[in-house]
Amino acid sequence: MLSPSTLTLDQLKREVGWPEQGLAGFYDTQVTLWTLSYYVFSLFLQVFLPGQVAEGVELACGGKLKYKFNGESYPDRFSDQRNILTTIPLIAFPTAIIILSSLATGTYMYGADFVVWTFLWDNYLQVITANLLIASLISLFVYIRSFSVPQPGKSNPELRQLAPGGHTGNALYDFFIGRELNPRITLPIPFVSEVSRTIDIKVFMEMRPGLLGWTILNLSNIAHQYRTYGYVTDSIVLVSIFQGFYILDALYMEPAIMTTMDVIMDGFGFMLSFGDVVWVPHLYSVQTRYLSVFPMELGWSGIALVLGVTAIGYSIFRGANNQKNRFRTNPNDPRVKHIKYIETASGSKLMTSGWWGLARHINYLGDWTMSWAYCLPTGIAGYTIIESISPSTGTLQKQAVQTPEVRGWGMILTYFYILYFGVLLIHREMRDEEKCRKKYGADWDRYTSMVRSRIIPGIY
Image (cartoon, one colour):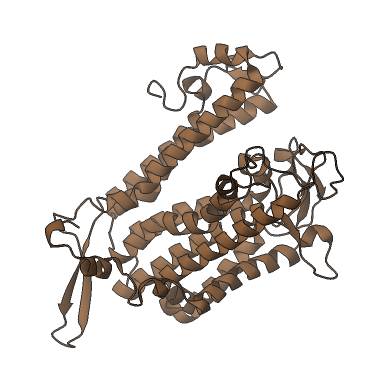
C-alpha cells in the first residue's frame, strides 16, 4: 500500500494473508468446535467449582438477582452494594488458575510446539470467525428470548426486565444494544443447586471466555516468537505482564462487576457479545502479535521508560481511588483529614482539593496513562516481510525487516488501543457527568464551578 500505483488485488491478498480458498477459508468446522469446547469447559468450571453466592443491586422490577462467583470475595469492600449469602473457602479465580495451569503443564512438556499454541497461530482467522459466529448466535438467542419478558405488574419470579434503552422498537438497534437487561438460562443439570446452574449470560461472557482468551492469545504469540527466533524478547514479555495483571486482577475482583454500568444499566446484545469475545481478545492482543513477528528488544533504557510511564499512571489512578475510598469510609483519617469539600443536599460530600480537586475524573487520566504501557514496547512500529531462497536448503524464507519507508506505519495498529481507550473513557466520563448532574442538581453546578477540569487538569 506504500506503492499504490503498483498495487494489485492479488498482491494485497497475499500480503495480508488472505486464505487461498477465498471467503470459505475463514471458516473451519473443526476449529469452530474446538473453540466452542473452550466455552463449554468454562461453563463446566462455572457450574461445578465451589464459589460464593451474592445478590446484585435492587432491580426496577423489585428484588435482587443471585450470582455465583468463583473469584475471591471482599464483603468489607462491597457490603454497601451486595449481600454475601454464603462464602466457601476457595482459591482466588480458580477458573483462570485451572486453565492457565493446564496450559503451563502442556508447555512444560512440549515447549513452544504445544498443540494449543500452534493451533491458535495456524488457525487465527478461523478462530476469529468461530468467536464471531458464537457471539452472533448468542445475540440472536437473547434478542428473540427477550420478547418473553413479563410485562410490568405481571408475575415475574425470575426477575426479568428490559434494559432502559434497549426496547426502542427499532429492531436493528435493539438487537445491537440489547433488549433484556440480565438474560439468564438455567441448565438442566441434576443434583446441582439452582444458583450454580443458573448462568447470567452477560456476566459470563464479559468475565470468562473473552478476558481469559486475551491472555491465552498473548501466550500463543510468545510461543510463536520463540519457535521463529529461538528466544523471547523483553518487549513481548513486558506487554504480556501488564495485560495479564489487568486481566487476572479483573477475575480476582469478579464480584465487583455487579455494580458496573454494564450490568446495572446496559442490555446484552450484539455490541457486548461481540465486544466480549471478538473485539477484546483479538484486538487487544495486537501488540504481542506484532512483536511475535518483529522481535523488538527494548533494553534497560526502554524498559525504564515504559515502567516510568506506568508508575506515573498507577500513582495517579491508585492515589486518587485510595483517597476517595478513605474519604468516604473515614473522613477523619489523617491522610484525608485536610481535604476540602462541599456538602450536597443529599448529604454526599464532594471533594474539592487533593487529587479530586485537580479534575472531576482524575482517575481516568491515570487509567489512560497506564494504557501506554501496552503500546510503548512496540516502539516506532512498522515492518515489511522480505522473501528469499535459502542457498543451503532451497526453501522459501521470510524475514520481518524495518525499512525507512515502513517505519511508523505499524503504529496505526499497535497504538490504536490508546486512541480507542481514550475515546472510551471520555464517553464514560460524559455518562458519569450526566448521572451526577441528575443526582446532585444545583450542587453539581456549584461543584463544577470549583473543579473545572474533567479529566486532564487545565486542558480538559
